[in-house]
Length: 374
Ligand SMILES: Cc1cc2nc3c(=O)[nH]c(=O)nc-3n(C[C@H](O)[C@H](O)[C@H](O)COP(=O)(O)OP(=O)(O)OC[C@H]3O[C@@H](n4cnc5c(N)ncnc54)[C@H](O)[C@@H]3O)c2cc1C
Image 1 (cartoon, protein in one colour):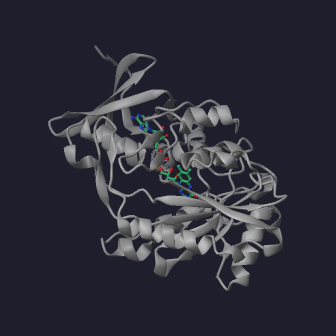
Image 2 (cartoon, rainbow, N blue to C red; image 1 turned 90 degrees about the vertical axis):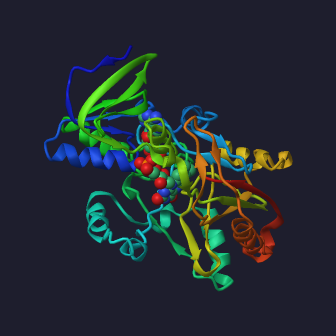
Image 3 (cartoon, helix red, strand yellow; image 1 turned 180 degrees about the vertical axis):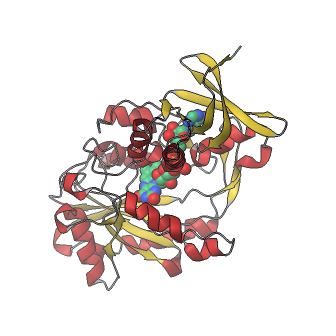
């Protein structure tokens, strides 16, 4: 039997990633009584491998193997995937949304006042990113700095914490919005696994959740489900909307590694520079990674000979995939990996391994490829 929380809220917000945290913060600003629920923990971010494994390495909670053999990752922690993301900031595709009568220009302008957005200053761009950029520019590509969500005065040049969670409050994550909302009166319950939305007379009246092995119900006038691309459909399907898990995208990506003798990679901001190859349908960037994640990529393609090898220069290729597939209410994820999507990634792979990407004088070999997705 579930225990009902005594307080009645104006809104209960499920999930504290960029989606949920933004809504919760905005509603709190307007004086609403808001409860935020997140399955993840709110313990302070340490930037350690052990902590990161806890929020991105849990099979079928944060790390999924889908039917096509691709890996899919999300972060289950307060702040969601923004705790581990690469903080690359793109303008929304305004023209695309215009077709649906949605104008996001006002929101985009507003968010720019609230979060830091800009290209990294030269001192924060690491040696791998610079080496790849030089090569790309020599080859005639329009390789350029990418905008990042970063407080650059707090950012450290030789650091491997971006992917693990930034303990220096340099990389913007939606935990900052959660902290802002709680400081203005919103409540946060972490480790609260929401299982379904309660619907009475065709109106959402609250949510059911599990915390420390006990079931609870939180009632609210408004229920916001913002549990991410995997979490929201699972909750909605379990709330009686079976089609919620159909047709999603996940941006499949590969990492192409090249060995450069003497390089000590892993300690710099990932995705500092790159180019959107619009006509070819993919993005190419540098993507240095801490050894833990590098080893996962390497083991995934059985290149055990390259494990823990820090002399690796990495180029990421990320393609746009078509809507499709199904996330089941028990959390199984199925999506065909189409020949078209594979073709785009392989096109990028061939481009990346063009030996002149890596200065000949420092080249050892172009090595392996890994496939993952999110
Ligand atoms: C490795 C990586 C790198 C990325 N890099 C970039 C980048 O450079 N630039 C960029 O723009 N985007 C990037 N992204 C994507 C970006 O992080 C996501 O698009 C964004 O975080 C989505 O926000 P969201 O609020 O929709 O969901 P999420 O961030 O996924 O947040 C969902 C929240 O819901 C919680 N939750 C899930 N299920 C439940 C449940 N049942 N009950 C309660 N709580 C639940 C989770 O713990 C989480 O806090 C990256 C993602 C990953 C994984």
